[in-house]
Image (cartoon, rainbow, N blue to C red):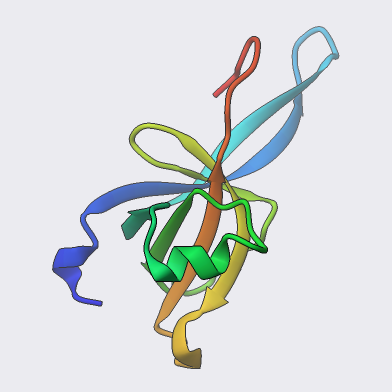
Length: 114
């Protein structure tokens, strides 16, 4: 994966619970890291056809490994046009250089704090 292919800026976020001034619980988003990523949308390629039977992912992201940050499926990805829930994380070829993330787009409903 060359640096030129990583042309999308994304934010890796986590959900946080906070208490407002009146004592009510408020759900929010905290940005952990902003990184460059390769983004591939779901389309009719052979690779996506084989994934279609076991995933509801809408996008694939490839990023470089971030030292000191352990990604998990409770986190979110913020791209320029949408928020994505991470459905799976995989170390590409087991080398520890790149991470492949399958994610699905989050459709906002009602009032949003994003």
